[in-house]
Picture 1 (spheres, rainbow, N blue to C red):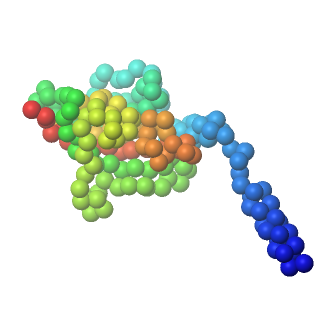
Picture 2: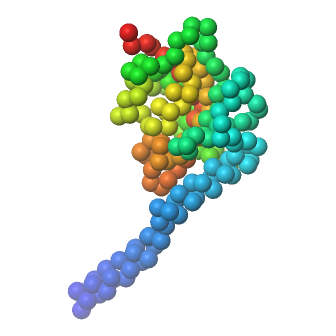
Length: 181
């Protein structure tokens, strides 16, 4: 009798546990929700998305270029345009960034403040094992020492912790370049 009660109790608890799992959310559903988050962010912030990168600086207000990979990019500071130096493969990128969600009430995930993170993130440009594809693409557009940009990164070109569930992330990115001579 005692064994039957324990078995029935275990089956009931297992049934509740299984029924509470939400296995109905597919990856396609996650991708659709990701696109909805991006679209909502764009609408709330009155952003204009263009498919050709502006060629003059400063860029028109609230204009973002959307690349073929899906990266949304806005150059906010050109950096050191007087030197003529631009980033090359293997150069060290020293990045400070503000990382945030695109929710209606955005959550700051990481801050570029030297108080919060005294050491900046560093990586070699075009070494894809070090940071996400979206950052490499953005740095390629930024090109110069002391440039700044705002980017929106889809999960498929972002950091792996945002792949499941598919989560787009916004960044305010500032870079310094250490040439690899």
